[in-house]
Image 1 (cartoon, rainbow, N blue to C red):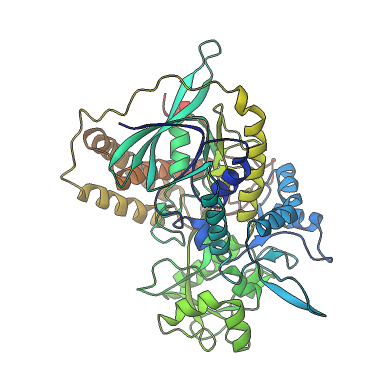
Image 2: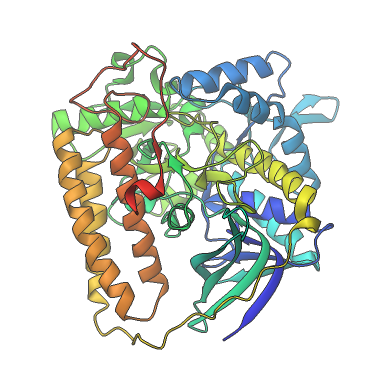
Length: 537
């Protein structure tokens, strides 16, 4: 059994985790960054759109704040929104210092400036991007910088089994002291100790049958924090991106919001537009409205998909703005310079998560959460496009400030028991894992998707409770594998989504229910908060 001692363990290697590691690296001697798969297999790498920040002279911080509050449907924390938006320009400049090359445009006399695009919910052009592969540019640059730093240890194929906590002898308060971690290559569970642990594992969108996210988005950090005793909130607000490529062989491929921002039109199979019938903003309405409109048209007309048409734009414009999308669609004989793109909604972003304060601190001492895994108050009931990578950068900065202010005073962890596998065996029934995984994602899509009802939620909860018992029995008898850990975490996330959805007796933002189709404006809007001891006494 291997034991590794670190100053800080960061779980997750996306924009949030790597940014934090780089901000801490000159001040802490041993930082572990754990990646469940390869470093480039997180959601950051696949993000197309960009990062929202105010650079245009005609734009303003106040306007960005207002747009974010409107998209969040009354549940954003105004102070957190102001904090995040205010850091926008500094965050972009920091990324440029790390080597990220954003798309620029000529302003004459040989000078250039950042090219800004516009996406749904934004009243101005304020999305900084690297063509249509912003996440890849950010991810590669941060990975390269992290590899260069001697104090950062990048650990690929390391999947966290459980957080390790300890109670203070006097106050009885919990603090995190490390984690049990499966090294998937060695098939060995390691014990990692740390003065501080940061969860930066991303979202939970693979809980649904159709998702734009990579396979890694299984809600691991949310489940880990929940089992450790952290509150979660607003899990009912799962954002469905309106436009995922619809093709039997395409897998999960996102068609960036920027396509609509640059004039792309949503049309029916006969070529007729329809978004004007749902919102005056048309294609630039917030994602929840566009996704519901597409879902409505598909179900009403019995069609497989709708189409996103940008072919009316000049070919040179399309090739320069959307080279990745163009090349990918061409693999399926779809030439977006001449043809519309078949699209359907798919699960895209987790707006709720682990409750944190403005410095990314959770309910457990020395445990932090940043990025999509956290519920900071920025997004409220619906995330506005391209605010997510900004949140990663801002709260990495805030977490670094909080950690460095107290790191030297945190006592070393006490002795930790090694992981015990003496009473388990290798599984001879892997089909149980694959079957339960499939069942879970199917009923979440059918019953807890874009449109919900009380009856559908009750049906989903009955199935979750059954699956939880089966998975717990399996987990107790067999050695852990990465697939089993993901399934165990995913069923917890499914339960949290359903429980939050059952608490909300209204439609608001991303949560739409036929039983309560209107927003309840008779009282101030409330966050849906779940407390572990109420469900795990």
